[in-house]
Amino acid sequence: MNPVGQLIRVDRSSPVPLYFQVAQRLEELIESGQLTPGTRLENEIALADQLGLSRPTMRQAIQYLVDKGLLVRKRGVGTQVVHAKVRRTVELTSLYDDLHRTHQQPRTEVLSFGETAAPDEVAVALALPPGAPVLAIERLRYAQGEPLAVMRNYLPFGLLQISAEDLAKHGLYQVMRSAGINLRLADQTIGARKATAAEAKALGEARGAPLLTMIRTAYDDAGRAVEYGHHAYRASLYSFELTLVAR
Image (cartoon, rainbow, N blue to C red; front, side):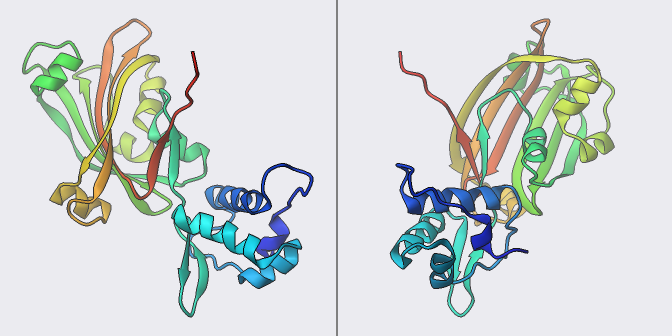
């Protein structure tokens, strides 16, 4: 691998502070996988010399990424890359597709798969009679070898032919698209809560660790409710991004 300094360019004519230019470029390298978890950076003096920057400027750039959880300083080891935080825009996409697109090496472990009677909230969301049969799926999603999310999904039973093996290899929305189900609209709620003991164990977190949550009901192009999902994500590795427009 090339020295990190050779992968960074700064524009001294830009109004963007030099430390922030360096931090942004390092973040891009981490999120693209060019700097993998465990990669050691040259020391701040060496990096500053390579880029023609002052040591305080380089220290500020490194500290910015340490504060964001992308780098860690270890005594006797130096500065190392840790797992990039998955940032996801709030769109009607699947987590698998988003991770695959950003080279996060998604992997899925199917925890449970089978028919069940719809819980009340699921029946309401899918516009089904109380206790109607649904396909209940629970999966553990990994990114770059780290457990990231526990995902629980419900589909109207008989909506499509699907197996646990399909979901171990592909994302749910990918399987649905392949079956001719076109997702067009979703109602979504984002929240937060503490991890249960089972979730903490699956995600490698302490019991009671903070989790981000997402509840979604997705509709196809005919207006049918075709999927209800309740996902829990590690807050230490995951965030949602929104673009706000002034009126």
